[in-house]
Image 1 (tube, rainbow, N blue to C red):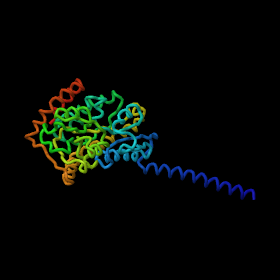
Image 2 (image 1 turned 180 degrees about the vertical axis):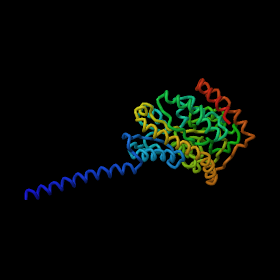
Image 3 (image 1 turned 90 degrees about the vertical axis):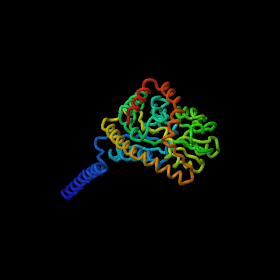
Image 4 (image 1 turned 90 degrees about the horizontal axis):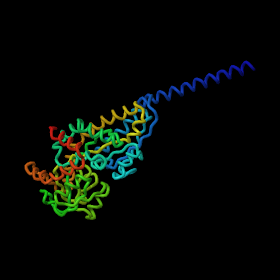
Length: 346
């Protein structure tokens, strides 16, 4: 009986060892199948943004977060808080700089209050086409802006092409700068406000989520934004006239707190940077098509669309000249360098 009991105990111990080994192998296999999480340290990164979730930039950002999480085997988790759930666009930049949130997406227009040279994307008629804007961001201009942002405490992960900015209003078709006189126009930042004033209207600054109600209640007569956001925020329900003059090529910036970034392992930094570069290119490819698509949608829903003819655009540019001087005064030598670079991009 003693020999039988000893044999039974030996079998039980052997089965326990085999089960433990099998369980370990199963976990390792699962980790490998999920995308190779080996070598990544656990990290949870919060990412906030304010755009509607179906905007092409939002789709790109969600894709970026998902890919980083999957490629790390679930070790590097990027938790996304969309459509203003965590922070408003007015709160975003300060939260990124202070580490209140690790990562966030916000417009270059709002970043211009921290890095004045970032206002280059709002200076009227600097970027004549989508291709010129892409070359500028991918070249020396983008490098200079990234460096200046890092000096302030935010690392730029990607520039997200929003598309061109236009004007809408409830009063009348805006066919020349003089038509703006006396109107109250929602602005998106300092440089756009100066353009609105140069055209004879009064700028009223407010966040994107406030515009629909302001137009509906006639708190403002009109607004400036891209047609992508106009369509998704249903401007067609509360405003009548749309003017296409492509005055500014708007950018959004996905940035991460620099101090937090510097503490991440090199392997994690490379994963995030590589995925961000792929996402930046994907978003850039969407911008032109989305501008055309949403302009057509707004027209089909009843908005009266006026496209400024090429031979009349010079009058709009001439009326906007005072804005250049204001930008240079705010941005200094770096702003001048960026304008010079833009002039030589074809």
